Image (cartoon, rainbow, N blue to C red; front, side):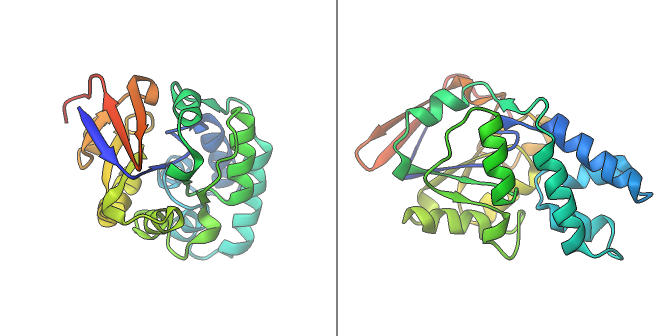
Length: 219
């Protein structure tokens, strides 16, 4: 299976880096400290901006203040934050002008986690600080396309959550989903589903990038 695009947009957590253990530790600790159901809170946290998670699970709390606290907890927790298979090789082979990272993390957290995982800071990045509405709103991916100077339909997105897939779809973009965080059955709205970036090959040719998937999984 081969996709062609003028720009690639990568979610960060669950696509480029594995931060799931840290995410779960932080949100469980925060939930227990506030007498909230930790399983419910963790389920809401994946793929969403932290401030929106807090607004959803604890509408009675000061979300802005709590968000700052959670952000610092996440920055401080670096244990187990590593690059996922294929991410370093794939990004190193791409010109900076042809891709962007579009993440629900804040910019300080994104910079910290990319550093923990040994990934170079990308030249183009959209974070939680750059949008009014996070995923599943299309706003993050539309801003990612604008940042690279391409139209939405010319972008190929890499995601790992239903909210992220929905955001890309709403923006009019094609999506390759990784079942690193959610099972494949939860990601069937994507154009293809893969276990990681390791089985992908991206080849820039002029103004386009051709992405080949050796063996996409059935949806």
